[in-house]
Length: 398
Image (cartoon, rainbow, N blue to C red; front, side, top):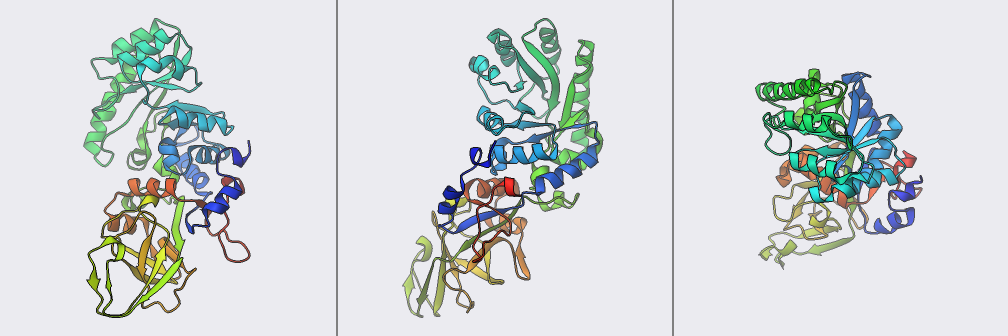
């Protein structure tokens, strides 16, 4: 399957980059982080890569293909659409669909060829009654309070599964609420263990058991069970304190744009920069306009943080608009139309980290990264043509 089947073709990307704002991706990060995960959990433990949220905004098909090439065992998705995108990209490994659909659509979901989640008696009965053979995982609620069978419910579910042949139970999984807490994690893992004991008592003794997502893997490596389901771990997209626990490579390396317009305003000018209240300038100001705005995943109102231009810090003026950001380049004599503006990443001796950017925008890292990744054109980190312009490059060139 060619790259053109899972991502915009070269010409489309070239046209997108005529509005010069982009995200630079490290296409080798997933393989490197997967190798580290494999080292942590061992060869016998399966690794299911979580590609929900359209692969954290990077593109579910794109990241799945990279992970499949690197030897991942399977995938988890948050919607049928993501599952089919991965299938259509030519990836044939198991795909587990997290709870996302209505019981009334069980027959259609079962026909997709994905492994489904059964999280309630209603969903269990719907898949059985649909009459379409389907592989399934049973989800346990260990105290999270969202999806899954409670201690008073799972025995009846195992019994119902034991006396039918439509649904093939392949595994049991759960999701922990507070990986940072040893006490909460221990309590919830005990609930999961109790469910597994009842599954064995019902005759299900060779199931894939899965509890550890990214932060659980880092904080509680002994809870690997027979499978783990990291997402942010493989993207290298955790907050700084979690990233410090392992040498992960961030897939999102930089966010940049180029100045498309420069204006000079003398002292005394009255301006309402960025839809702000008009003010009288006390000094001459030179501004640069970058074509990146809140449409691209950033915020609208201050604080807006800083940017780097030719290795120098520059402040952002006014409010950020839908597609533009105004930058004060008064003190930067090198800044001009075409200059690269770094919102995230390194420029010369200085850098803006994802944690700094997230803090300045008052957003958690886990929310900011997919905002940026899903909105901006993707280029291979550092890839330029002979003229120094960025080339759109897909993962097949990584």
